[in-house]
Length: 250
Image 1 (cartoon, rainbow, N blue to C red):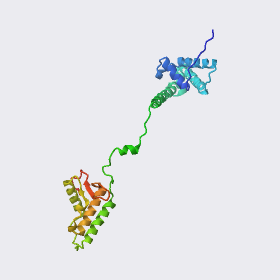
Image 2 (tube, rainbow, N blue to C red; image 1 turned 90 degrees about the vertical axis):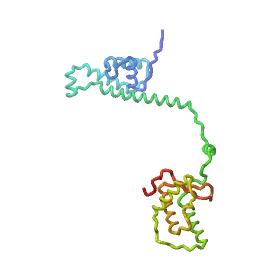
Image 3 (tube, one colour; image 1 turned 90 degrees about the horizontal axis):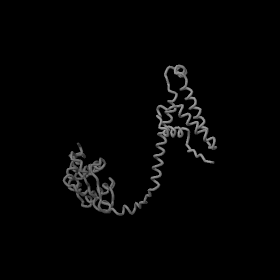
Image 4 (cartoon, helix red, strand yellow; image 1 turned 180 degrees about the vertical axis):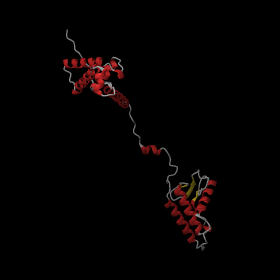
């Protein structure tokens, strides 16, 4: 009666050894080397009988197992003299390789499981333009820059010149830090923000206007205030950031 023998295929000799250890429920830290060598050699003989192609790695491992088995059969004293003073278990290196391979195999199985699971997931493409169109922009003009403030400042100076106002420059009695504190105090009283022009009092003189403008630029660079424009060419508003109670100079 003819029958066909089908042997499981392994990725390498370590894969075969791990399978034998798990199959016979052996302790990987205390491998019965004689038993595992016999099981390994039986597999190689069966593979040879059915003409199963095995790589040279399987034969190298067979030689390694036989060497370890020979060392375990030697008297302990002779083994200690051969290895030196420190008694080394001849199975240690094999155990390390098996443990490392087991971790590698577990990780590979997990990645394979994740890949299989991911093939069942289909991602819907997102049209970014359509998505953004669902939400209105609270500030269509976007954040303004110091250059925008400069243009407004120049407009204030133009208005002063157009009025033909005589400007008397007095000795400076205020500092930029003083005006920074002044601006923050005003903004604390107006949480909704204030128009940029309200900080530039035309009657206060050119030096006060320039100092206030520099104070606003300094606050803007420090992130203590921000500016907005609700419509194109509309008024510029200055807002506080809400965490500036201590003043700019503190």
